[in-house]
Image (cartoon, rainbow, N blue to C red):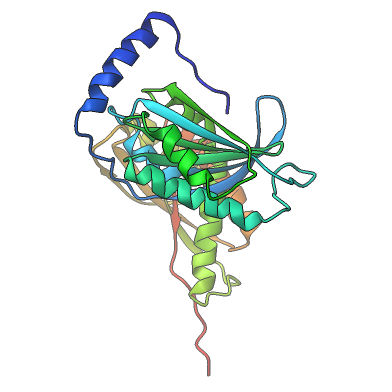
Length: 280
């Protein structure tokens, strides 16, 4: 969550190039938003609540979006954790929505926020930062009494986005929760064990073969392999019967995250069919 600052000649070069880009017609990156919230720590060891759009990763870095803009809001009456506004908490949601809409009109990308020690920092990437301060000031005219400040940095490689991006374990835990909730909404009681189908991808066939050996030793059945485009073209589909208890699924999937990374790959989640008991 620490800021990335670029100095010297590189800064001068970026200032020159971004002025040119800002004058050109820019198309806003297209992606599907996938917001998650998790608890982490700042560089100073303070507790932080992080909300980040994982969907933005598919368009990082976007060449024309050199400006990383942040809007730091001071909470009026934070609780003892420094994460929750006790006085009119609904106003924070209204501020976030208004800022997001305002940035949208400027083709800005709202990618995350961090709340810690009584402050909430909203983060955006923009092709042209010239109107950022004016737009934020205009929004805050409707929310008198809040203290805030704005910071604009050159971040062409989107380092700040990855400063708030969660690690693989956090992403997987949130994925598990989403899948289990989907099954519950379908009427699945999650009391019956079943076979889960898992996916993983690797940079080489050799890496995939090594991972396959690890799976077989742990009782997984290989269901298929294939090749696709991209940095991890060698995919594998595998399955194993699984109790649907949240903790047990977490134990299995985090182990698969570890095994995938040890073999240079990426674990891509699981699916299964719902089991719904028909009412008589």
